[in-house]
Image 1: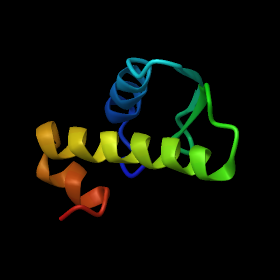
Image 2 (image 1 turned 90 degrees about the vertical axis):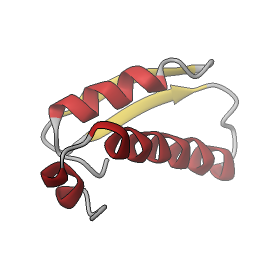
Image 3 (image 1 turned 180 degrees about the horizontal axis):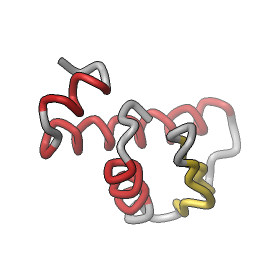
Length: 77
């Protein structure tokens, strides 16, 4: 994840569970990583597509409600 904020890690995880077939299995605060179980991701390309989708979701969330400091920390400003 780009942001190191617990809020954005949690919110992104919640939004990911809205995608049919995706479930957050684990969230690591220390590393800012979400681990997802995603159905129909049988190839490396499909896994990368799912990963890119989560990162894009986080970026949209950061732009929508992130403060300047959070955006800078995430490398978006």
